[in-house]
Structure formats: C-alpha cells, structure tokens
Length: 410
Image (tube, rainbow, N blue to C red):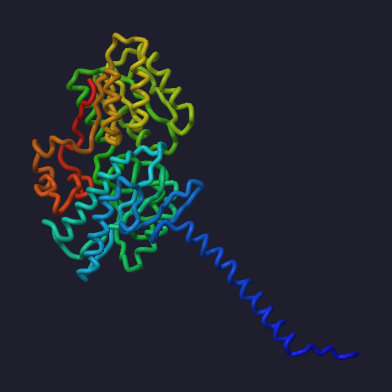
C-alpha cells in the first residue's frame, strides 16, 4: 500500500487543533460552572436557593440578609473583626432562625430583629462588657430561609464550621416550634453542637442531647392562663386550635390548656375544641364561621391555640359576630408577641378583651429587678450598644414569674 505522508506544517496544525479542542472540552464546562456558582453566590457562605432565589447560609455579618437587619449585622461584623484583630482565643456561636421572611412565616421582621439585637448584646457583654470572659465569642448569623425550608443546607454549613477557623461550638435561636426546626435541632445535636432554644415553648420537644430551653413551656403557659381565669371566676371556656400537622406549638398549647383548665374544680369546656388547619388555603374560611357557634355556646373565655398572625384573622371574624351585644374574652399564648404595633392596634378595633402569656413583661424590669441582671436592665447607650435588653438571649433560665399577662385590647 502506498504510504501517506503529510507535510510538517499540516501535522503541526492538526496537533494544535487537537490540543485546542481538548482544552475547550475542559475549560468550557468549568467556565459554565464558575459562572453558575457566581450567579448562585450571595456572599461568603451564603448562596441563592429555590425558585425564588432566596439567600441562605451562614455569615459573620459581612452579608446583610434584609435591610432592617443591616444596623445590627454591621455591629456584629465589627465585633467579630475586633475579636480576630485582638488575637485572643475565641470560639463561635451561631444564631440560627429564618431571617428572610414571607407572609408564610409566623415570626415578624420586628421580632427576629430584636432577637438578633439581643444576641449582639450578649456577645458584646461577654467579649468586653461587664461579663467579660475568655475565650472570646464570634457571632455567626445563620439563615434557614422562609419557613426554615432550607434548613438542611444551613445546618450542613454550620456543621462544617466546627472544624474550620470559626471553631463553632454552639447554636442558639433555633426558630419556632415546628417540624423543620426540630429536625434541624436533631441533626445539629447528632453532630455534637450545644443548642440553646430562645423561644421554643412546645412541650413535646424532648430527647435532644445538648438542648437547653430558656423559655417556659406551653404547660407553664396553660397553668398561668388557668390561674388567671380562676382568679377572674371564669368557669366556661372553649378551645380554638390550629390542627396543622407541623405546628407543635399550637397542638401542645391546646392540649395543655384542655387538661389544666378542667383540672380546676367547677371549670369546664362547653364544647369539643373548634379547629382550623393553617396548612390548607381554606383556613381563613374555617375561622370565619366560628363566631356564630361561639354566640350559641356563650363561653366566658375563648382559648386560642394558634399563631399570632392567625389570631388577627380570628379577631376580624369575631368583630363581625352575630351577637354584637355579647362581650368576648380571648386568651392565647406567647406567639402573640410576634405581632407588630399595627397588628395590635387593628386587633383592638374588634372590641374584644384579649390577653396572652408573654415570655417576658416590661414590669419585670421594675417590679422584679432580681429576675434580670442590672446591666441588662439599664437603657443602652449609643456608644456601646443599640440592642434592646433581652433575657431570652442572655440568660440560661427563665426569670421568675415569666408568664405574666398582658392586656392589649378592651
């Protein structure tokens, strides 16, 4: 057979072409992946996830999750930078909850901002305030996304921080008492992190190693409610409860009140509990039909076992009740503190007497000063801190008489 011989310049072109194709075969996918990562990245430790491209993950304050958190996150960032600059030994503590909120969340922007302000106050006091101690603390901010939907990603990020330069040792905050947050607690616990829940009150959160709660439980709130009703000589009540499967707060609160109220001699529930399911779109309609039944039952008190944002709809329904000449007393739990001042003002228009058990009360600063440390009770100064004092994030046990009553509608 005749032998095919190519000129040298053609061979060189072929070889160069092959090399270029090989390089492109590797470089193009890498470039596409790099561009995709850049588009998905919100900041160091924070990425966009889901159809709504929500920014979730862990930051030292260098990424701002929401505008209303900007001032306190900047202070946390400055304190973290100071800890590293000083060169002292330090460990990290993460404050984890849902910071990018939608109308589906039970917490309000105001409530999560106050929580983070309290965490910053605790960090400042430990590092260079009246409780100065060692090792110093870096405060990390961990966002699980709306309704904690991205908790798995954020929890994995936190677990990685155990062995990084951050030296993460504990996670606090932890969000409302629902399925996603409790699943997050269990995974963090299984990976050896200490846990401090600031506002979880559901009674059935048990068996999680390393978990400490600083709030009274729903049983405590039910006893406080029943004691108040006994003092007011109220003997007939009805329970309205959210039956959503993942709402541990509502279930345990309703169950506790049902048991505790009837333990008091002469007190009775005049009907089986009236329920709605906030996990289905029709929950507003379910609440709308309840006032007519309540007019027929004539209870002296209605115990509402549901989230604060559902309570406002319930009060709207009662405002349009058939028996306008009949007064109502509605009693509920601590989630009502998530309502804003505008929410409370609107609720007052229903002309229903509303009371709720709060995890803390302004009177505790004045009438029970021993329940909090004096430095926490002092008004903050602009030169050192701007956070409102919060025993939830600075104490390891609830103060005496934590479940006091607030009345905000008459």
